[in-house]
Image 1 (cartoon, rainbow, N blue to C red):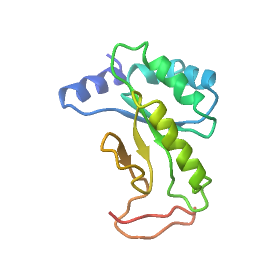
Image 2 (image 1 turned 60 degrees about the horizontal axis):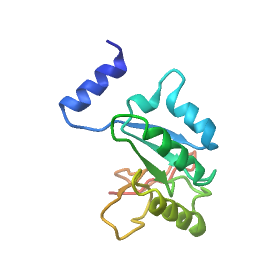
Image 3 (image 1 turned 120 degrees about the vertical axis):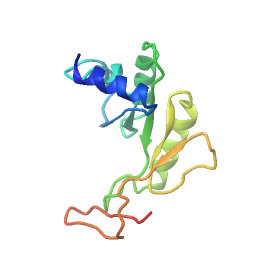
Image 4 (image 1 turned 90 degrees about the vertical axis):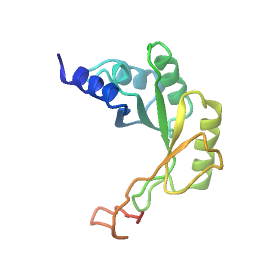
Length: 147
């Protein structure tokens, strides 16, 4: 039995989900191939993935359509904000676009990667990157926030 199947079996046995922290960010066709083909065949085992909406909503549409062909539930987290200083996601219009995309694909999008709580809806997860016990940073412009 391969390692991915073993991991899937463990996740089902102990009731946890598998996230592929791949950060998809390309046109729909390319992302579809990355999601379904290649060495890791991510669509076969990852319960959800994270996605940049920079290429447009077509990326989410492509992943959703591909996920519908799988016999198990799949979803994605949209990267709305990042913890690195000077990130291009530090833009109100970008964040609003991510929220609109979430509303449009609400059957597939399960939440956000964000520094702030972006909606009042309890439907979506908000996962915060860069959480550290000390409110510091590093030499690569990573900004840590405290819990």
